[in-house]
Length: 464
Ligand SMILES: [Zn+2]
Image 1 (tube, protein in one colour):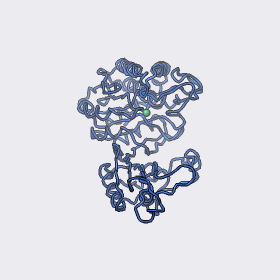
Image 2 (image 1 turned 180 degrees about the horizontal axis):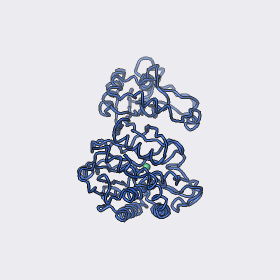
Image 3 (image 1 turned 120 degrees about the vertical axis):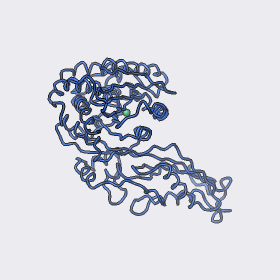
Image 4 (image 1 turned 60 degrees about the horizontal axis):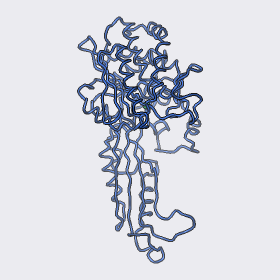
């Protein structure tokens, strides 16, 4: 199975460690903050820097892809094995805003190494995790004696992820032929913690809506009219109260249609994770857990769909009393979706459910924001098993599995390219994504290099 002796990869990685970290530090010095217009040129400089570095790494094809916003980088390294499968790696080269006065101990764009960690904006999210693929592919070649990778390797590194990827879907659709792949590796996530390497198997999707209700043409006197006309605030409250049943399940008919249920194997593997509910509650700043009956906390946030009230309002909310029947009320709802759920069908179900409950004389408007699809690669998928094997060889440990409760552009890749999406990340929760003093653990970063070095051989064998 192992076409790359694990120790040779480790030695190669160690030998190139210093140059690799110097290069990463150079990239981190470019403040590629996509959200701030004054950094527009820096985002472009970051793309050009990466493109040049990928060329130096050996990628015969490197291109800057323009979008309606910030540029992306595309690179391609075909295998000399014509039968080899094609793998696309996804990451992003833009970063979150950062300023010394936000609470950074050192300049966020002047990276420093301290206590085995590199501190700097983008160290973990996501430049460090994109960059481990460069030394990874070199180690793969050097230790196998190959001159080209064992897979047709493609890289797409976008420049607007931290701004919500507004042009990403269009880019992927426009370049679908060149991006075509048998599997997608997303390196923009993390693992459970410093000592528990994990592979994430999927992300939830997201549907959001705002419901406005209008009753009387203006606020009216509750003495003159109260008790005899419909109250839109009452209607919103009834709607929200009807959202869940007594078991914490979403009570919208058809909401669970198609949901991919957790398997016993996955539940057992989740249960092996060192999850401490008290610590988790402290992070949540909540007094108690709740949710759908019959599921653990991790199962609820990773593998079950949800409905949440994000905001609710209507009527008088100032000091003292104002005896009115308000003319309008509103609620904002969001739904996290899991594999098997179709956002369009969920939106239809929400609309039908809500409309059936409004009293006569209350007008409504329901507005949906663009939805994000869920994505999931089953545990027994050969490509997922290959990722876990590669990671296991690098870490020398059993690899466990997680999911991600949030939502992201990875689903667009799954959707447009029709390829399974796999997550390979070495970041840990303490890395401080989007926060001051973002860092990456150097030991884990180098494990990322080693994992990437093992991955192409493993995937090449698994995907035939
Ligand atoms: Zn990221």
